[in-house]
Length: 190
Image 1 (tube, rainbow, N blue to C red):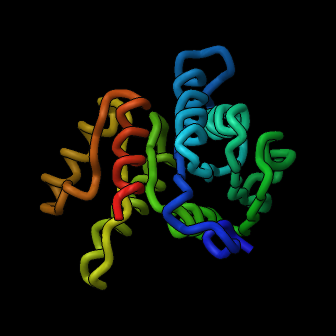
Image 2: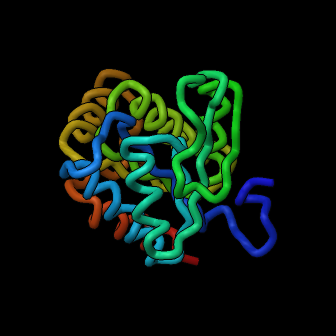
């Protein structure tokens, strides 16, 4: 059973957080990711990540330190060298492909925060952006997508221009605090 299906929980109470798996403990990027998890848990929001190390573990650690619910969506057959979800994950959802993993993260969450990362994080951003973009065609409210840092702001602006697509489903901010403020404001409406 996913968090979105769990009794007493609502889809909008989960925030997917994407970021680099290479983030190391003790770095500024780790501390920012942990802060993201703490702030989301303090806002009574569950976090969902890819469930492994790096930024995913930092977010999970931060959320767990404030009593938050931590979901890890893993892909054990894709990453057989990884020994399982990080120790802060309390609900693991395993899939056999990256596509299923990303789909689950975007589907079970009411919003997404995209921390600095690389190609994997980019694929997650694109999936969340596309889901928010097409929501209007079904008459649904778009799930907020918030990117943190200049890297994503420049890329999203460039892609929107080059592909002649709508950039408005993605909000770009500078800090984790701003990202959490945008997400909590959007999720606590209505």
